[in-house]
Image 1: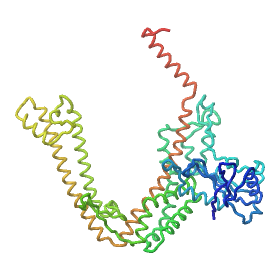
Image 2: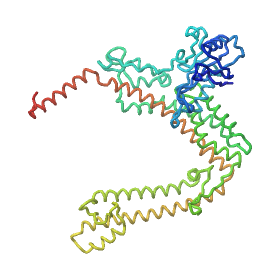
Image 3: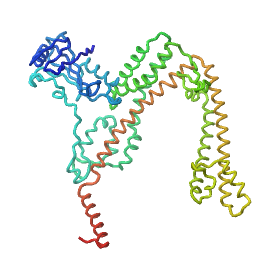
Image 4: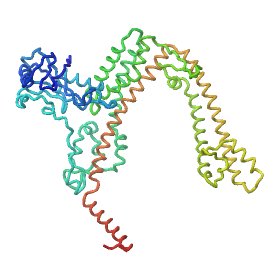
Length: 498
């Protein structure tokens, strides 16, 4: 287990307070620290992000004390978890993935580059028993070094491309698709324009194959847990359900290149907190029932019905796609009519425009105004052009009104169909809607977004390198001199001589 205790901290008067509440003064802190280290009582130290707790913005740390097997302990396991957090208002917050990673790494004593390592007592002794984590773990990002020769002569440094080796191991031929040798050793040139890099990556067979492999991992997890989720019944424990789901998902993505298993885990935990947990609590309390709740206005009149477990959109997507498609087709036609109205108003509106007389103070054109104006000018030939535009606009207004009426009628029919279907749903249909149509597609889409992040990171880095060394310094200097000469020539022709 991971045991968390308060670290030694000053009371503001040159003293320290130990976890047991014993007060020491003077040089006691250094002596106690040295004594704990030498006796092997300190098992580990975990550095946390800053600004986690109210009342202090400084980074906190966890000191793990363990007397068991202390005499044989030859070092202290340190973790620098200071970069794993998310902003939450004006504070920072540890995500589920951050906590899980800390616990996993500590319990398994895993050494992870720039994150954790076992620090020998001898090394701590050489640092005068200072337990400041940055002395032992360098968690800083590697500096992005600018290549002077590439700035002068062009080309992308080969070492920068080779630094993307994690990607080339998964996409072994993609590098050859993107780069070719420059005119001198140690430098490469981009084969395609920078704007086409993302499309090239997305279309590459190895990227597509990798995406299918990742999707297959999720589908295997889905096939395993779908029956278990559909077997949820009153009395089950939601915490046990999410624990089984999340741990198995974490295990499924362990060892997969490029994709971080803790990022995948976080997608599940985020969805659990935002939506899935509420669904599961409903199921373990009430069973597989699609209960409707009335929505009322301020006057207490029922305006709609909702089902927390199964949103209306799920019902429509599974049972009423044709009806929804008909409504969407009408909405598309309505949008086109509105667009035509806007074009006429833009062309003929404003001062002295043909639609000026029917435009009210708020810039709107109403059917009543148009009809009134038509009555006034319909027998006057001098207003023929205006009459033509007015009739065209009136026709659009009438078409929009007719389509809006049809949309309202079809929407009401659809709402009635859906409401009736809620009452006819069988338990198996509810399980299909919740698990197959709601939970799993959401998680599948979340994991697919990780593939987008992978390609975005690679694309961004390649474009960054290409743009950085795209124009060598001599060309820039020559261009500046050329433009300077043009400006001076213009100024001289204007009589400005210096």
